[in-house]
Image: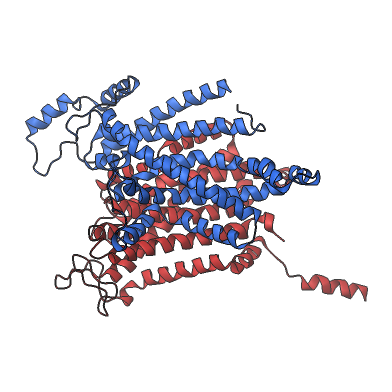
Length: 305
Length: 299
């Protein structure tokens, strides 16, 4: 187990290095530079700025300077946000992105698991059809289309909720709903499929035939076993929520990390782009690692190696 | 007598192929057929766009700015006096071609990489799959954004071809993993062993036995990839790094209408609903194909 975790973390460090290298190359291939303005700056000024931020050095040197900084926890300085450090910018965006992601994740599981299970236990009933229909619809409608429709209903027509911004509970409702729709649908589908599968297992038949009450069979045998596949997709789901939120952040004007990334691309803010990609890649990798460990912990049939 | 009776029994059972069976099952699936019908409907509207509307997607008319839907402009006009209906059906061209042509790039990269990794195994497999792992570590939408910002500076920047490439270069990863897994599991099956025992060579076995049998899941996966690519294009155009204006795109229409959400909400509703319905149709079709092609359900 420990060896597995250590190996995975070493591999992760290598992957992150490659991800940063690819990002670095792509970023510098993007035409234009951080000093492009409507009114061109004097060449002397550009030269001085490049010198100050080390952009006059050869690219490979810039890259290794950056990596050296990252190893010391220094993500560099943002060029577009008046010299603030990238770490402080990301730390400002993180609580917003994380709040959205975690709330949406909880809501998604709270809706998806019960509906998926109810659908399976009462297969081919009305609740089954309704769950499956909604799960299919929400699995295929993108969050930002849902966001626009919600905005038109709740903000424009009913005037119940503010369209955008950050700070109040009312401003959270629509973005969280939009983000939760897809993972809720996925969880419902997977819970339904795995519950149907577990219900046909021999140990469930045994439990029933030895005279256990239906509720005990459901809670102790069906429920616990059917959640295993739900856990495996929970990691990618949470990672998708964190990374996928950037389009929702843009739609609802929430100053999270995703919105900063998009603004960073527009401003050729090299260190902000690198910092946010690094943040996303680490988040995805760590969540996947946690899920793998959790998976082995709840299912003794799985051995990590 | 007994003989003829037996021949009769044989004769009433028609010959079934995998694909014939799948087609029958697909036809029975109402949701999948509804999805297919909508996709055909939108495709026809996109192809016949010049016949359906007298307006071009970029025709500006400053005498008809922000008009409500009328007999002249079925879905109204935008802030530049462009006809919304025209932009919507020309925008379907963008969405559909991104959705479909991206898959050619996905197949061109993903199919060979997956097939080689699965068939060769060993070191080759290891190297290819580690590369795929690195691709997986990237937040995919962000990589597409980065790639399209890179391509913007080239001669095809802001064109639809740029989007094919940017999305295709990121989306092939799933297919390669899928093909590899399929080939690995097919490789040990008896019919492949039999073919090898009869002297079949590597290439022959890959092309004659492995790839055709892996085709079902690939088709299903491609069908599910199409709505994802359509969404990616809309999202990129929405944040302003997709197709260059005035080229029509549903994502760009959503962006254009966004500032007027209170005054003219239907400017947003039409492209949003069109996008949702098209993606839903592809998902229904994909679900139907998956059920139809799954041999475990074969009766």
